[in-house]
Length: 618
Image 1 (cartoon, rainbow, N blue to C red):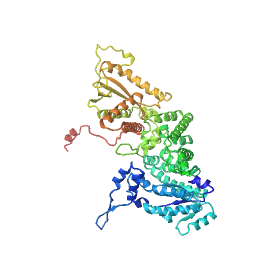
Image 2 (cartoon, helix red, strand yellow):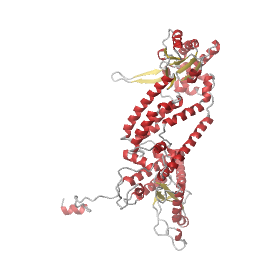
Image 3 (cartoon, helix red, strand yellow):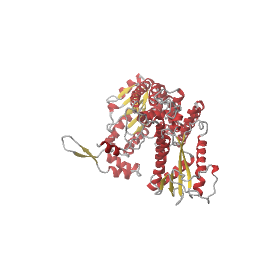
Image 4 (cartoon, rainbow, N blue to C red):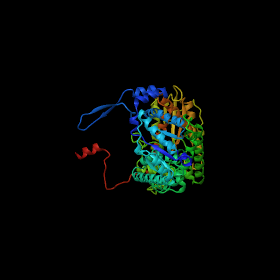
């Protein structure tokens, strides 16, 4: 509509029609009758829903409750209400289209629910308007003249418009008006409209920054999952919208993100944060960079629809799947290039962090909503530490020295066994896997003893085989891979930031640990225990090795089949649970107390309370 108004020399004005209480005023019986002819496939559903009056209840504080029946319009909250209203008003569109053919008018119209738009010469628009008012009465479409606007191009046309539409209560303007959320009119109106809109967003983001000071996890989720999508529509419908987004971009870069991280970010880090989480970023895009892509993609995908509106075709063009695939492919390629460029210029630790962030399952803790009942929530300090750990940035408030005597840093904190956090990290994953296995198998055991090796079993422990009596693995489940056969699993958590692994490809790290575990247990379990052995290797970021991934695929398939649920739902939840568990374990290693400070002022503390009570005769 904007292109036709700005580029068309013959079009003198555009009229933006508003309807009174549109969805509640639709003539329901007429609409149901027309639906049988227009779209018989959907008619039974609409007739069954709307053939009787909708029950509405009025509750008063002093007067008794009252029930009334609604016999007009659509029901609020009904999933079919938009479709029903569109089908109910479609005959009006056809009547106006027929008017063009009968009287030789040149009015081009576009409708979205109750919002009607027409463009053409002023004399033709008056005829079109009168016909709309007349036809709308029969279908429950009552125009609201006081909120209907006519936009003209110059002063002379404005005077002519007021003369032609005399006797109506329509409004007139040369500047422009808001149209379906975007803007239609002069460049000055566009500039004013977009500036006001961005200023409004800046105030809301400032409020979000205040929330992020106390609840950063909730603020991040609110922005990524909801708030930032408010910009998308305007980017797709208003050309050159990026010219107005600088204040908002600056607020996000220098206000919102530093609040989440607890410190400012470099330009390189800001570019990384703009990447989607699956490419190692945070999904907080640079709006000035994103806006031109959104507008170009919108023009490409809707090109056939725009052409149909300009030519006033009555048939809706098929969905342009090829254009959508092209846009998605181009966008994925752009993200890959930017991710590769970021890794090329990043430090060795940041490069490893980005590689881990691209692995499947590593970013699930970012993409899920912070739900307390699921355990998927982080407090203020935990979320800030988690973001900095994701990119291996220095954390504030860490001690300079570890109780073990070595210098305390990120790598040392994640590897040091003092305090028992490494064992807790291991045991939590073992317990989770055992509990998941227990959902589909009865015979599940934690830390089962392997059958001792006797003289009849010839083995060479020089190859790394564990031949010790009392050797154990983490989990045993009967019937997991094959009915009746015991499957053994052993968990290992590795730190890919360690000095010995920082330069090794992630796939190679997993392969090395899986081979080491198999050298230790595979021969013995297969030949002595007559079972199977699967090493379950994780990173501190929640990435899993190849064999661990196959284990979860098979386990989630079993759970989905047993509970009659979708495999995709089960595997998504399990990945998210593993991601949060690994993350919280890593934070425990960073912030947990590794030594108990002795307080000499307390004095004696009993080790045998019963004896001490008897001795003191309490």
